[in-house]
Amino acid sequence: MNSKPVVIIGAGLAGLCCARHLKAHGCNFVLLEAGDEVGGRVRTDIVDGFRLDHGFQVFQTAYPEAQQQLNYGALRLRSFDPGALIRTGGKQVLMSDPWRRPQDVFAVMMNGVGTFSDRLKLARLRWRVTRGSLEEQWAQPDSTTEQYLRETNGLSADMVDRFFRPWFTGVFLEDRLKTSSRFFRFIFRMFALGDAALPEEGMGAIPKQLAEGLTASQLRLNARVDSLQGLHVQLQNGEAIDSQALVMAVDGPEVTRLTHGQIRSPQFHSTTCFYFAAAEPPFRQKLLMLNGDQTGPINNLCVPSNVVPGYAPHGQALISASVVGSKQDTPDLEGAVRAQLRDWFGEKTDQWSLLRSYVIRNALPDQAAPFRDTPTSPKIAAGLYQCGDHCETASIHGAMVSGRKAAEAVLRALSLESGSA
Image 1 (tube, rainbow, N blue to C red):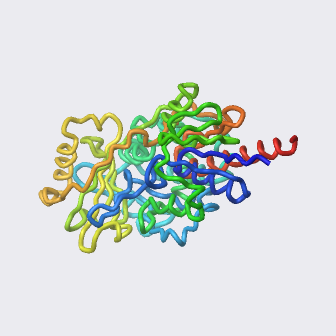
Image 2 (tube, one colour):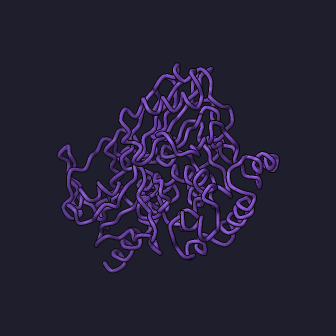
Image 3 (tube, rainbow, N blue to C red):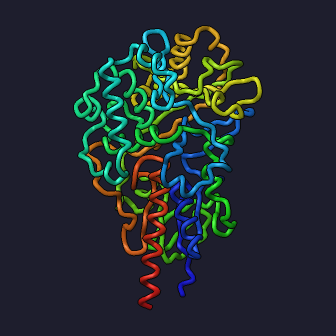
């Protein structure tokens, strides 16, 4: 029996799910994390009593893999209301989900975004993406999201530009809607079938729950990998580990570094998030506010403390403002964001204090159309595997699925090796 461990590099969601699956099957492994805590891009900082996720994030309760791997009750999830506020023409209007909030039907019909025909086409779109299995949805023809909305579903330019573009710019982190319609259909289905939610202790509670049950010898923090030589792992502290299999559960750029350029990183999209503290929220709905005019740097604004009061100290509000794409290059970005906030909500925003800003360089892998028909294989070479959302879909679901699949591939290979020994 081989006493060498399976080495997993990176304790983000993919690496953690890989580790959990190996542990469940009694496999010897060690999970190496360069940072001081688990989570990768899904982390939460505590700043002056506020919970600041690393960039604005939400959790979709309908994710099938998450339903299998997470204890939702222990996360104490608090849900957004279905829909969004749209800031357009100097006012904010409601775009709600009339299937889940029929009391909002009249307000949605009269909000001035899109046409009556768009409402009927939106109902047909919702029906299309929620019927059948995920596999059947994925097998449908691919196009860009914009083509799918405008040409396949016949939605008007006004509906796309004032609602879908700002909404899915925040999801895809690109504003041309060139992302695969396969990915769009998956995400739209998740919104339709479940809730967008936040854990009471922040998004970082998700990886922390996944890490529960891993021992200190199985999960090693502050263990940065310096280099790889085959299945030999060299740490920056001088320690060396010989593995029987190696799983790279790190972002694409790090995979490229560790493989000396043999594996090319996919393109990633970035985002910048500003967190402000305020004496009171600019609105009290549990909704995301979208920039329907597409002017100014802000793509979307949220008050997380409206959804989870514990995101802010008692008597205060936490506000996030997210900037995407080339607008992050705006000179004096903080000043431009503050100017837009003042335009939207008035002089009271002058009293909002900046808690922290996050620049997330490799926030999401690009998944432009035409997208692959099948997920990327976890196996790279003999004994070498990869996982991460860049291997599946750019989502929490995709990261978790890829981690499990990498573990399954490792277990199959080790079983074959032991059977032939």
